[in-house]
Image (tube, rainbow, N blue to C red; front, side, top):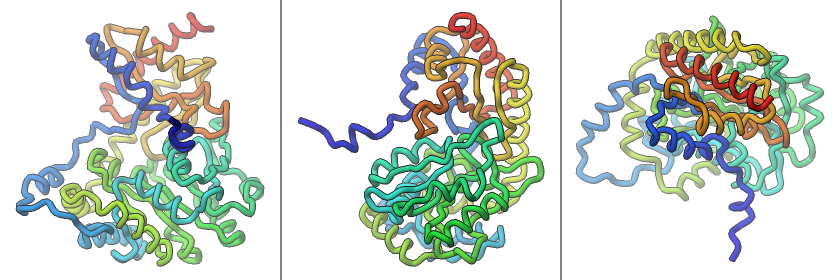
Length: 398
């Protein structure tokens, strides 16, 4: 018997597939510094825990398919703090930002359609495109120029009659790049010219550093019927396990399509929505110290990596990731070797091989993604162990 082509061809997680090697190291008593995945050690705010503990209904029943009205309104109000007027009708709650990606792609693209996405990109775009039988057309960016978007003409060259949307992730996972208004306007102009949707994955919008600001594609009201934004509480409130995200759009047809998808999976989780509501009620002041903390961690990481000869990198402007080009041949082999063979005072480090963040074969093979999600002390130690491991690896595999 055969499983489906979709089941055979869908990409295995480039991050999670190496987790068994880390589990084995831990079983052997090794301390592993996890800087491979976007799981912050910032404590989840207490209101979320209180909301769950104080839930006193007698039946944990189904909720609305589109999510509870008070949470949808709270998320709309949150965008209003950025001078982006929205209503609860523009928000549909999803099971994490991942489901929001799945719903958005499925709402705008049919089987065989194409979506242009700058690469490297969030690896699960590959998976959800495969679910929808949609082809990702990669727009390959380069660490040498800071992963900036190319000219409008270069983007336009990727557009075909099958193109349905352009998807931009800013601040970017995995590069940390924050697109400028001028860069965004290239995509906006092309969306208008070619009748395309513009999807924005903006789940890291609070985490922009060095006094810069994030510009949402929701601010381009002249294409408001073409804009879909992916949102999530996972990183915003250090609440990854809650799995609460949202599709945000002013397009009623897209909204209705997403609602039908939401109805098919019944409803998002009730307790987690209650927790999310309590978090949105904390106020915008919550983000200032969190942003400062991530900026300090970024600076520690960038300074430490800067002491390694032969690497190529660009200082991240947002999110909490960096792509680093290493002076090695195969980053996946290096990551696996670090977990199975390298120990420094019985410690090692896990980073993410970057090949899985590309859809172009052969790209990212000598790059890794590092997430600065640990406190400064642990981050410094992780860098020391990483550098020692890389030095030894280069002597063994020159």
